[in-house]
Each structure stands twice: as structure tokens, then as C-alpha cells.
Image 1 (cartoon, one colour):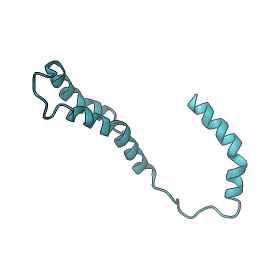
Image 2 (spheres, one colour):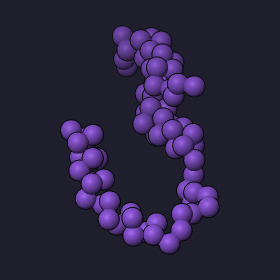
Image 3 (cartoon, one colour):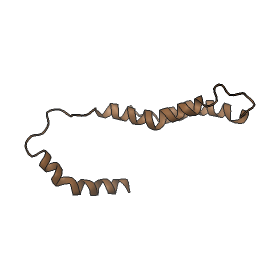
Image 4 (cartoon, rainbow, N blue to C red):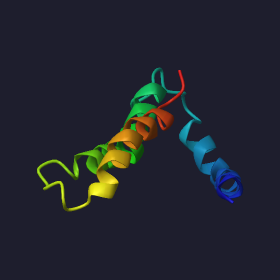
Length: 87
């Protein structure tokens, strides 16, 4: 569904893009590159939430949630590793 929406938007906005680039094509991009975008996306969508889950139990007494502490600390590195960008 997202791909279809993208293609429809691209088709509709084609005249706008053509008009924007009618005079000259920019010499260099005005935004950040692809790699920083990938890293920022990973950090905001995977890294920060997993870090929050891992740090949620720090400073809590052991009797509060003893059945969840070990699995959370065990699975947090694997979750952040599985969500990391492929090089």
C-alpha cells in the first residue's frame, strides 16, 4: 500500500518537479546524505526505544518484576542488533 501511494504521489507531482528543475539541476544536494538518514532512522525507531526498555529496570527493587528483568536484559542487545542497518 505504501509503494502504491508513493507511485501515485510521484505521478501527480511529476509536473511540479519538472518545473522546479526546469532552469538548472542543483550542483549538490541541500540536505543530509543517505547514510546519516539511515542511522537517524535506526536510532529513533529502534535504538532509543530498546535503550528505554533496557534502562527501565535500573534502580528498581528486584522483587518488583523478577520474571522480566533477565529476559529484558538478554533480549535488548539482540533487538538492537537485529534492527541495525546492514552495511
